[in-house]
Length: 360
Image 1 (cartoon, helix red, strand yellow):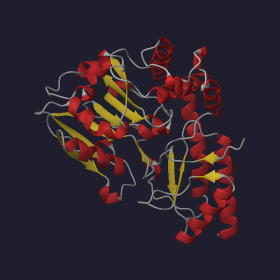
Image 2 (cartoon, rainbow, N blue to C red; image 1 turned 135 degrees about the vertical axis):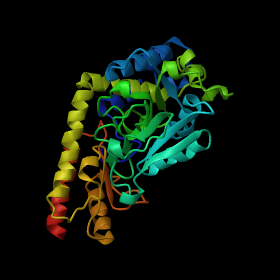
Image 3 (cartoon, rainbow, N blue to C red; image 1 turned 180 degrees about the vertical axis):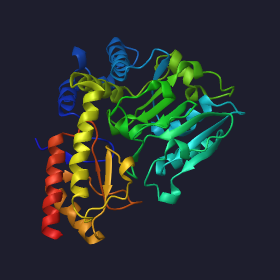
């Protein structure tokens, strides 16, 4: 069996143990004589999967009881608007920190359904840094502040979350469960599972229960968080297979040391790449401010586009895959999510050194 080193920005690489276990159960899950993707979401086999995923998520994140965990569809993209619909009345306002592509998209979608404003923008710095708390302009009577904890395309993250006097709402898609979360700072956290936790097709929303049902809006049933909380995310057919795989990933994370261990691994992986960049005398260059560097998505450039294309071509020949930067920023992007083996990052780091020596 051939396995490449997959540095894709999403969907992510998944633990080999989880993939093998899923493969072994795929045709006949729990001795039912059918696959999990053929089973009923109302049946006892799936009910066990669903509840295990919910309880594993709570244990792993040390989530307080006053938060609901919702398994939804539509990805984080739907949550740009759905979060504002559910957490704001028509008379309330929220501030948005615009740190890049995803911060901008969340602001744009929320503005279509609620009263929101831009509390900070990174446009002047070309979105290469996150703001200090004092740089964020919060208007009077602002209900909450929205942040994007990690920008997948720009390669920046909040090393420390803003210290503000109002609750926050956060899109944590691309660094979901890569570090501990101080739940006291947040009313809502959401993210797509496909960056760090499982296959595409599942969004996870963690919302403070006391915030539910106060929007005063006549929302369609599916768009109302309270409907999903009351029905344990089983009010309609949930994305069963992604939840099933994610449950296995969560169990794997618990067995391997939990969030403290995975934050340690993230620091090791990212350091292997940043050290090569920083020791290359500018030959490899990262536009990101040092204090805002992502540990999940590292972007860098070579001296010219010809060398970048050669770098990607030679890396691909060594099974170092999906390193081409996003079309909007170019260059190289290496994504180092939770299941990325440190050994794979070491191979990439050594390749970077060898490529510099041969072409620098």
